[in-house]
Amino acid sequence: MFLALKEIKHEKLRYGLIILMIFLISYLIFMLSSLAVGLASENTQAINSWGTKKVVLNKNANISLSKSILTKKDLKDDEIGKNEAYIGQVAVVVKSKKRPSVSAQFLGIKKDQFIYKDQDLVAGKRGKGKTEITVDSSLRDKGYRLGDKISLNGSARKYKIVGFVNNAKINIAPIIYGSFATWRKLRMVAPNVAAAAIVSKNANYKYNYKDAKTYPIATFINKLPGYTAQNMTFELMIGFLFVISLIIIAVFLYILTMQKMHNLAVMRAQGIPSKTLVGATVSQSIILVVVGVVIALILMWITAAVLPAAVPMSFTPAIMVAGTLGMLVMGIIGSLIPIRSILKVDPAKAIGE
Image (cartoon, rainbow, N blue to C red; front, side, top):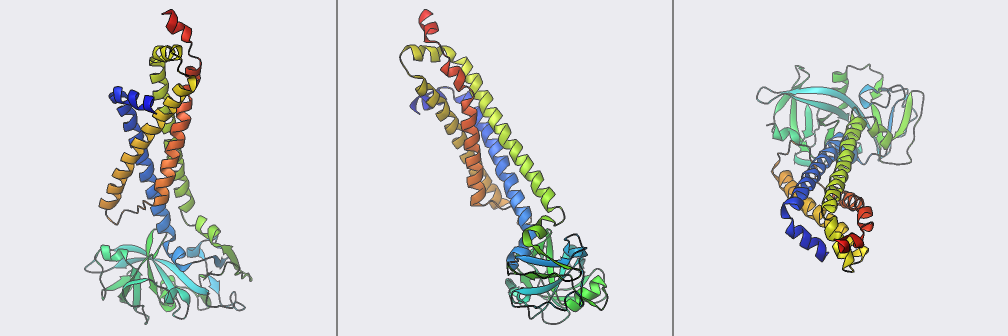
């Protein structure tokens, strides 16, 4: 470690450039990871807040809530307990004379079921009538306030915002909670339609009848529009960044090792064992990675603090730990590349010179 620190101190510019590259890659990894987690969270906020374990949909709906319709006949034998709830979903555009238009998802819910009762209100109250609605708190950032009257999909009927709810997003769109009567009107379904789906907090819940089929929540989430493709894209980019960091560290250390081969030969001739020289190279890599990652963490923390709430970023401790450990592993692997050259150093060349 002492030898590694002395060399870094002596060659400040060279090692400073390596730290700069590690910092930039680490910062980008933290940024992409935070965005990936934030976007994934906004896809499933409401589902997670309900504690959903199983979802019942129309078996012909391709595991899509927006395409699912369950009739009264489909659900005639279903027993709804305290852990189950009917929901109806339809995409809407929220319009108000004084506020900007917002794309949202309207969810019809029943007042005697857990989704209605468990709404995490940050302001106002739960809706009671057909024209009272509660909306995701993100609409407050767009200027909407309690008491505002809005129209949905350009309808003549006005709906009054009576409450704001935390964690009410699905497919990255804010949710509007309202009555089933409103959902039926917006979706324009037949009179025999009972709901779009049943959600259950019971992991053992199962209901299969005619066109109804039960799915685990993981299957349902993976089928959300764009969810899997989005996550795979971020994972691929982050993976490439780790590989790039490995290549940069390995190449820089290899070049530096080749440039100091004579010095290494002299140290071997003086009786310094190979393991000491190898240890110094690995230590250098660890020090460089730690310094670069720490700077990236500090800047990322500042970035997360100053970015507006509209940016879906979630810089969590798990991301910090995973990113740091990943960079350390890449640094250690990269430092092993020039080790073979160090082990092959011939002390006799230094003595001969």
